[in-house]
Amino acid sequence: MKLTVANKVILGFGIIALLLLIASLSSLWSFNTISNSSSRVNDIAVPAQQQSNFAQIQLLKLAKLSALGFTAEQTADINRYQ
Image: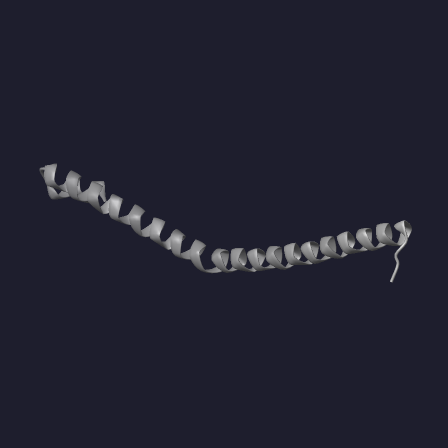
C-alpha cells in the first residue's frame, strides 16, 4: 500500500486532531468531576465550619465572662458583664 505525501499529511493531521479531541474530552470530564467535588465540599464542609466558628466564639465569650466574673467584687458586676 503506497501513500502519497498528501495522504500522509492528511493522516498525520487527522491523528493529531483525534488526540486533541480525546484530550479535550478528558479535560472536560475532569473539570466536571472537580466541579461536583467542590459542590459537595460547599454543601457539607462549609456549614460544619460555620458551626465550629460559632462554637469557638461562644467559648471565647464564656472564657471572658469567667475571667471578668473572677475579678468582680459583687453579683451585680457579674450580671452586668453578662
